[in-house]
Image 1 (cartoon, one colour):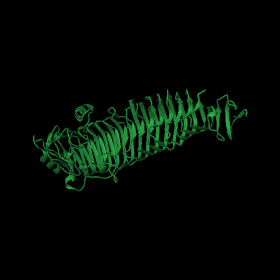
Image 2: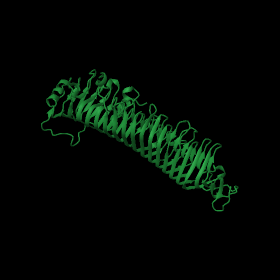
Image 3: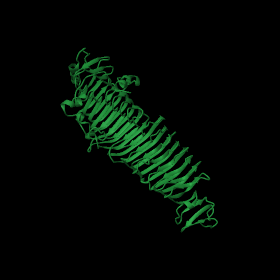
Image 4: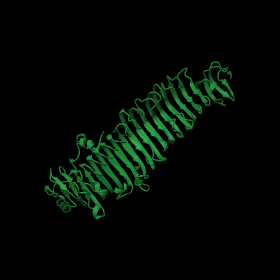
Length: 574
């Protein structure tokens, strides 16, 4: 079992980061105030006096200095604090933050604060309550920059807590911390977080426009956040984006280049069930790209959307090089019935899908527009679906999909147990399936809804049936090749009613074409559909290619006029 203690103990071996100052970070030494050397005791008063004396300028700590403090160090507006090579430890029983800005206690706002380097340590047993449990706490600051820090905490809450901030940069941070790494509360605008390494005992980066009651000292909408280059081992999510409560939101967030290991889901979007302050807020314009992080076994997937007020989410560039987790890679599972306005998942490569699908929308999920584009699945386990819809989708587009399938694996599946599953319109194009079972689409419950299914530029090899339906569905075909199939276009179950239209169909010679259970029905307007026309519903103008030599119309292309099948070449009727 992986615990916080073992995770933090190994953090130093995971990365080399923190404390180093790169060229361009450090201002000139000329005119800088030098902090006093460590006293060997409590350095709080001496350090705060120096921080006040050097306020508005550059302040440096002596290299290899090891300070101990028992109250917050306070940085003032216009100050650059350079602590490269220094260690500052907050002593046990201090019950406070380690580093803050002046506005935290004095009120007003601060501006233009930069902290460079240093190892900032919250010792075992510091204690405290509420917001004083955070280590580096920043409030009401414009243009804050934290660069090249290492933060270590043995207990308590957030390592870096940001709230009511604008134009903030947090970069090249090494964590070995008990709780969250970087935690943003609203209001916050234009925050850039990058270059995170190490290990966190809770979420590595969290956006919470509102927080739990004990930590809810500031609140508001969080906008224009960029989180990138994250490679951390976390016991929770690597990135969590919440909307807060109704009236707050997380808007225009980009998360990219995420690797490492997550304790549950790599990216968590939406709500936190802990209390009302973190439920029901809006998340919109979220982009997640270039993610290849893993998860602990059976603990989560890549993107988990559980919010009840989610707008547009765009996920691209996922890579899963080994066997996929036993959880969906992308899961939409609202805490109660809720609508996602638009979800795009594109440019995905998965070595193998196990029992869980690549994308899953549960029974509470309502998605207005769902686009899945440019997906490659190297292999599947039996009965795995690439896309599984147990809720409802208004408009679904699947395109440019390549899948090697095993057993009963489908590109799109409405599971039989999800009796209210519905896809109002589905369009599949540019799909290639090779395997020994399954097919393109499965909707096998009589209560499923799939009224319109457009299939274009599709090739299947070894799939028994293109579609398996128990629904009233109009199936539009265009340039469809079905190879090495024992079945053909459609398996229609007892409550199914399929109307097949289009052209450009090519199927395996001698295949059955359709299989219709008692009570089911098929009408064909596709001349290339090779089938025993005695199994079809006779509809004026319908067409097919008859394969039953015992019928009086003979084999070959036929058209229905009234209730009579007539051969298009010989004129013979049935």
